[in-house]
Image (cartoon, rainbow, N blue to C red; front, top):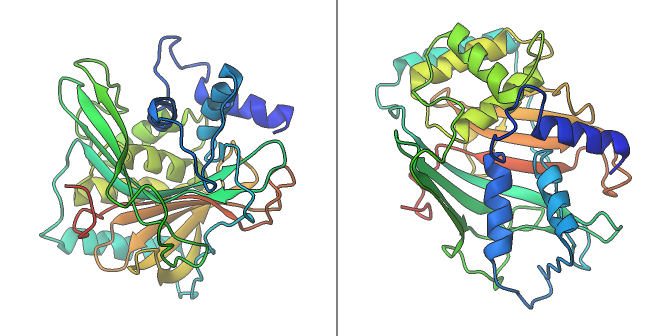
Length: 330
């Protein structure tokens, strides 16, 4: 990590407008607690050896950038293969208009809920030049209440290789709870204590709060903000449509085309570049059936010599609207 990378990470974790007593970002707190509470594991694929508090600080700083720096195994670096898109006619405005039409016609959409259930994958690498390893996919189930109590439970999902094929006989077994964090009353601090306003102005304000962006909200920034909101709320269709209104009006929005997400669902990809990470491209995946935002991905634009990864390498993905899957947490 360069000095500039560290400065950007610090700024993103604690921008000037963030109160001094603000808590760690949810993802950072969840993963830090998970690692600190986990007993030592003696197996080759995930032999984590933390030797100082500085290592934990590095973890916190890098979680918020979408890349986890951890001692890796001796296995070759693997990241999931990029999704392959088929170009579609029409621009971003047309894609979003079609998605909003599906949202408006869907009578069976979910209600707004203080819960976020996602299936995610996170890249792990070592800053000392060791080769990278692939983390198992994880179910992350956040539930919180009006009194700001709640919990976030992380459950192991099936491990996969770069092709998405299941890798057998890897501990912990799918369904194993690998991390649990409890919030007492008034401890959890959501971006939006009340259900988000289903209007473009309301969503723009919330996205600006989520990203700390100043000036014009770029498409990449809006997508990063959407990822944060969907990490705390299940939005109803009207709220999702308002969120898409803001994304449609954000400069730098690109249409990638149609594809299948990593669960085999038909989706349309929208892409942008966050202003704080010029070597990262982010993608939102819109369901071709419902119009809802069902996925977020982050990938390198150019090669990263520190991580020894080529351009296009995936560093994170999260998938939503997954509660109906047979292997989802209940």
